Length: 434
Image (tube, rainbow, N blue to C red; front, side, top):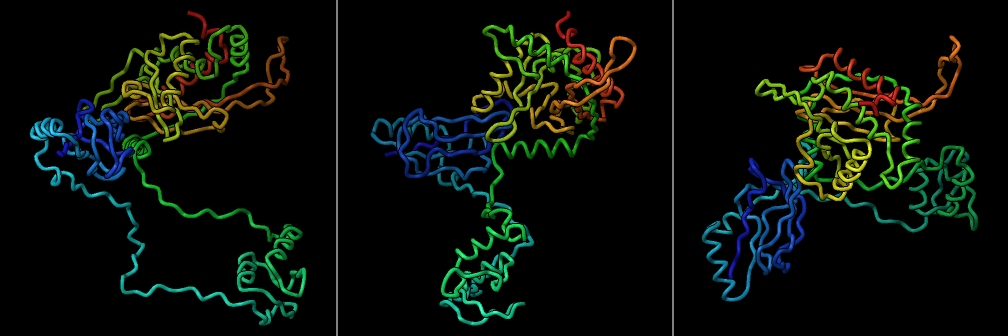
């Protein structure tokens, strides 16, 4: 028998530590060679790690949510066989000398509010009074009637705000739960019916992707002076163009509104290079990018991820649709690589039909702008009738929101950029022109 210490490997340039987001084994489990045993998250991606040996897990370095430094012990595995023992001994010498010293990583306890006091060990806990048999004691009510009911029925009636004297018992003069149910059913208009059932309280430790989102959003709001601008756009013709393109798409992917909006953004960016930029506030340098590497905020089971469409300006509508679908699926399945989740120069975020009337999205730092299209609604509008007058017509309208870093983007530039995007999507033939 021998102990093999698996040290946290270097899983990315400039990465000093990683967070444990999921253990797939626990002490006592048998682990096979090349079996994935833990998921570690860096600032860029979640990386599954595999065991180089077969054996039994003896110790693991901390709990989910703990940080592990590169090079420190992550797991100790007991391996079998003399030959394996010799090989493992050589590897242990090249790694950490003492597993027990390194593996004693204290787990982080959830943060508890200082306003909540922990009961002292010497205190005697309160006990609830024991349930009494059915009571015949009178309930003095506004009607002066005596009501027979068990303590449980009385408690439920008090919780619901029901006067037991108003409840008609079904038999033998004793009010039962069934009588309360009947009273509630026939007197819901009186406000007795509950609005819903209470769920049990739960504490959820903020770890992994949700922790990264929390940190990034806090940094963005703390360091960036946001301002937002919202404009209403008529997308009736854009929707008509989208329908026509889908009718003749053949075997191509179905177009949503998103590829068309991205095409409009990419066409507008060259006139407003300050929008497609990143700001290094420590160095005091703004980098304006020639290519549009568009971050696409995607909701996943673990939280919000932002895969990146590389060189979005060089792709046609169908290529954009394919890449949007591929990246969204990679993000949802957890297969997106660190390269696919980094390097964006501008971000678009959309909630689709849940998009609301207007949004004020938070900038994806260190970018300087984020664009949020909102949901499409139909409203009557005055439109030219072709004879110098106007007529009322049902039109499809959508608001476009933009949030910008006011340190490097002026309000006039942001508004002018959105107006250019509006011009393109209200005359969508321009999107197909060179």
